[in-house]
Image (cartoon, rainbow, N blue to C red; front, side, top):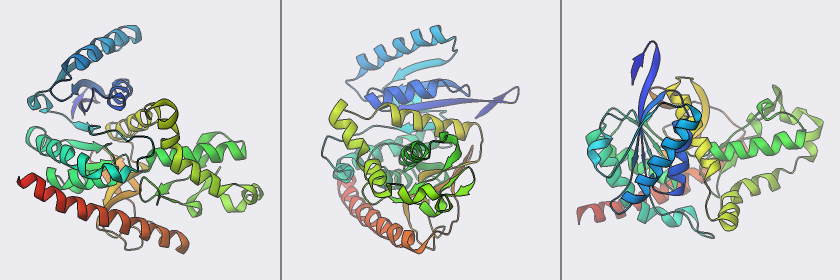
Length: 327
């Protein structure tokens, strides 16, 4: 990342920019002042979509008074010099399909892009969005060969924001007053941290209204929100797009905010580790750094189960990938 009068100037590449999620991610990220260059990257056969998207964006920039160097490409050479690469490529999840069902097919695509990024943008930070995001983050980490802090995934960031919204509505407070997070898999085994939830700085269990909080219903909705949206409108676009843009802004702004993303952990959560999974991490210009935490024992049990699930699937995907990549 270069500096201009003390401000960051960054090049961001979105891989998978011809898809619905990729397009809205690109639009959301383009509104971040730090981003001065953007590449809409896609695969061969999607040139017309990328070209049309580029000019549609340029029209919006004119209306918003935004100055940004924008281009599209299917040539890996254009990835060169990227400060951040966002991977949204892959087969989108269909209604009724578990995120883990996508693992084998998307792993091949993601592994190939990880190698391209390592070759053309070896100093970049990679944000993984492709599902299942925890497993795909591990794939990118392995096949890029990058340091662990420079590869992280969307993880449970959006899940945490969904839960935060429900809690704020229940207690009738501004959403900024609620601090909560979900860790573990971005999927069925996710773990809400009620022990780490506060409202206005007050532990949530110390508020009388906590007794009537429909915790199980809230968590169920968070787990199924994506499927519900896909069933009704065909795809989740705006929520993930805005959540991803907030992560990019946090990194480029060197904000050192603690957000729940998929990152490689060793022993930060009760000595449970050796996997990429959703955990609290400090984000800045150098990437994502998991924060050591201690949680309630009941949450530890659930988190361990989530970790074992993802670790098992990740190992299976790596075995399958080795066979496919060798062919």
